[in-house]
Length: 116
Length: 109
Image 1 (tube, rainbow over the protein chains, first blue to last red):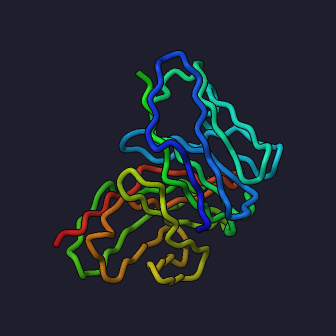
Image 2: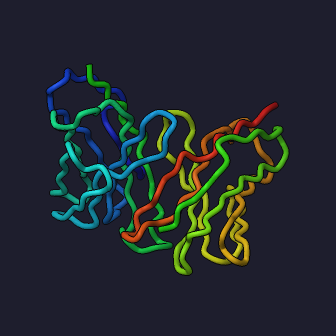
Image 3: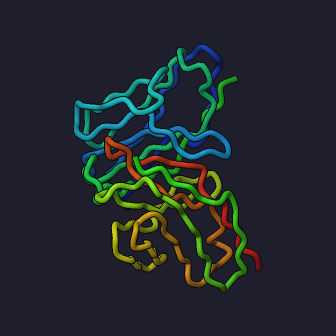
């Protein structure tokens, strides 16, 4: 089956620890995205990558880091510098990023991170 | 940037058409309007998008006003599984999508 996988579904970490969220896609999409969602709110863009070995900051990149070494993978690290990391994290991909009208995004199931 | 405004919640009877409005008065001439929906605790699902003309697919229809300042998503025969938060979205200057809080649609039996 083609799609986007995120693991794990639920993640618990102690305050002050870095944690890495996995995102893999087998859709052969060039662009990948990470969003954060807080209860009752819409999605906010953390980072996006339009091509391998390149990525750009979104609206709320502080306290997060990413890498894009392979087309299929776009892991997100939530660092200890992120002041309020507890949230629902969503990964998405699209065929080609940055082109209006062709940028339909397909989402993974999400990872719910709780920092204790 | 194409900022959008949607009602926070709506109800619809099962089997009836659900009409979800969206205002996007700041949208530019070449910016598309996208609709996604999110069922509780899942990833958003793409529904439809459009520029000027009305669009229809297997999930829904999108009606865009001639001045492009508003649009309506129509689910022709709503079912209980259509209960979700529906997002009307436009792009920012970097072609990334701007997500608001959406409309919580509740389908009632």
